[in-house]
Image 1 (cartoon, helix red, strand yellow):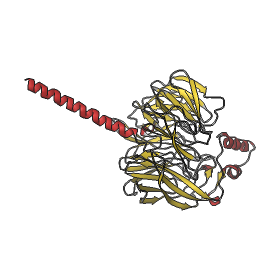
Image 2 (spheres, one colour):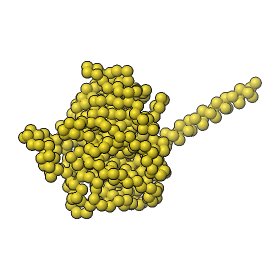
Image 3 (tube, rainbow, N blue to C red):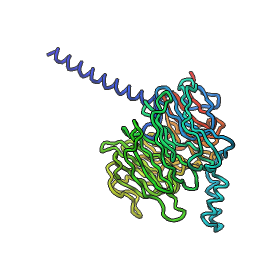
Image 4 (cartoon, helix red, strand yellow):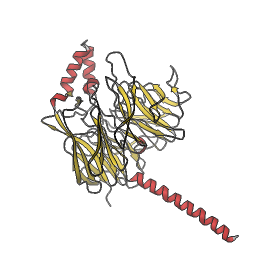
Amino acid sequence: MNRLINRFFFSRRAGLFCALFLISLTAHGQDISWQQFRGPESNPVGANARLAERWSKTENVEWSQEIPGRGWSSPIVAGGKVYLTTVTTDGKSKKPQIGTEYSNEYIAELVKQGLPEEEVLKRVTERDVELPNEVTIHYLLYCLDLKSGKAEWTKEFHTGRPPGGRHRKNSFVSETPVTDGKFIYVYVANLGLWAFDLKGSVVWTTPLEANPIYLDFGTGSSPALSGNLMIIVSDNQKQQYIAAFDKQTGKQVWRVNRDIGSSEPPRQRSGWATPYIWRHALRTEIVAIGPETVVSYDQAGKELWRMAGMAMTPIPTPFAYEGLLYINGGRGRPLFAIRPGATGDISLKEGQTSNEFIVWSQARGGTYLPSSLAYEGAVYTLTETGILNRFDAKTGKQTYKTRIDPAATAFTTSPWAYNGKLFCLSEEGQTFVVKTGEQFQLLHVNELDDMALASPALVGERLLIRTEHRLYSIRRKG
C-alpha cells in the first residue's frame, strides 16, 4: 500500500513539475520575443520586474543604433535578433511635422471657404503630401543583435517610385513586419509581400496591385499571422479587401472584398487599422476595423459579425483582455467591450449602450491615433492631444479623464505598461510615466529628444524604442 501511495504522489509531483516546466518555457518564450505590432495579444504589457522605469539619451541605455532613412514601423524580436524596416530616399524628402491638427484644421478652413473637393485636395496635397513622382525610395530590412545593437545584415528588397503618396507625418514603410520565429514577413501596402529567412535571403515575394489611398495620406495597417496564414487588410479608395496568404509560399488562399465606409463625398473608404487575431474558447476570429464599421471573419474569410460606430478614419488596433474584445472606435466614437460568440449585425440601436454581445460602450471613448491597452483591470486610452482616460475593464465606468501634462500635446505612439506604471511617449520624444490606479499621478518624464511615432517592443529586461533617427535598447543597469 505504501509503495502504491508513494508511486501516486511521485506521479503527481512529476506531472506538476512537467506542467510548471512547460509553463515556464512558454512564459520565457513570450518574454524573449515580440513577434508582431503591439506584441502578444496586441496588448503591450511587460511582465519583467527589471524593465526600466527611467531613461534618457544616456541613462539606462544599453545601446543605441542609428537607422538610416525613415520608417514608423515598430521593431520585432525573435531568436535574439531585432528586425525593422526603413526607407531611404534619393534626393530631398518632406520632413515629418509634430502634431496632428495642422492638416485637419487646414482642410476645415478650405471647406469653410466653400472650395470644391478637387481644390481642397489639390491644396492639401501641395502643402502636406509627398507624391510618388517626387521621390525614388529604397526599401530596407535590418537585422540587429538584441544584446549589442550591432547590425548583422541589411537587405534592400525593393527600389523605385512608391506605389502612392504619403502625408508628411507618415512614412513610406509604416507597416510593422511579423515573424513566426522562422521567417520574417514584410508587408508594404499596395506594393507587395516578402518572406525572408533569418539570414536575410528572400524566400518568396508576392506583388500586390496599387490602389489609391484617401488624399494620398499613405498606409499603415500591419499584417498578422493566424496559423499558416498571413492576413492583410487593404481598405482603400478603389476596392477594400481582406486577404489571406500561405505563409510558406506567398500564394493567396482567399480574398474577400469589403464594402464599408461612406459613399457620399468626401467618400473616405481608406483605413489604417491592423487586424487582430482573436483566439477564444469558441473559435478564432480575424477582427478588422474599417471606415465606420468593424467586421469579424473566420479562418476561411467568412463574415461572422459586424458592428457600426467606427470613425471615418480608423487607426487604433483591437485587442483582447480577460475574455473580452476591446474595440477603439476612433476619434469622437465609442469604446466598446465585446463578448465572444457574436453573429450577424450587433450594432447598437439608438439610445443603447449595450446589447447581447456588447457588454458596454463609452460614448466618445475612442481615440484618433494611439491604440488602447488594458492593465490591472482597467482600459486606458490616450488621445493624440494628450488626454488620458481610464475605464473599468469589466463595467466601462470611467474613473478619470485628464491631460497628462500642459506641455504634452502630440501623441501617435500607443501607450504601454509594466510594474504598476503606464508609459506615454509623445512625438517630441518625452515619455510621461503615470502610476496606474484609480487616481491619476504623473511620476516623472523621460527625455530622448528625438521625434517618435513608432510603438515600442518589450523583450525580457529590454525596452526597444524607435525614434526618427535611432533605435534604443533601454535596460536597467546593475
